[in-house]
Length: 125
Image (cartoon, rainbow, N blue to C red; front, side, top):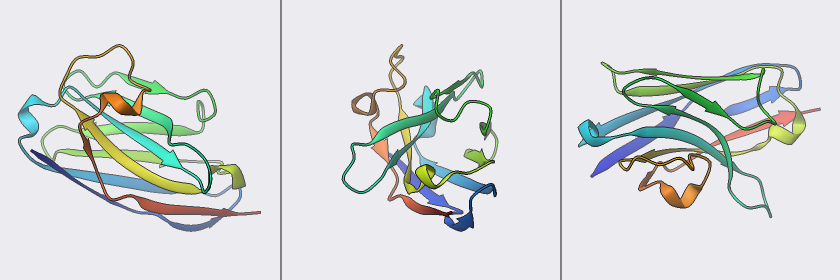
């Protein structure tokens, strides 16, 4: 089992920045990749970014490329999402997720085995 806890959400004005953090505990040694997803009211959960746990290779949704940066601290077992130039359409609950199986479809939420409880990010215009 892997337990994930997110933090860092809040209210920010458009153009501002927020940094989300996810702390992993439990059996993290088998983790292959960790990702961030988001879900806005009335919408499906969508991929934001992911990073391979060992190699640190990053993947991004087109909508956040150039604005968001995912990083991980292997020793501290944390994955952060730095979000810059925020837009109102970035408003959502952001979830951290972990997957222990090697996959090429890192953007598919059904590939992930473990999820955090989510943290709200609200971007005002």
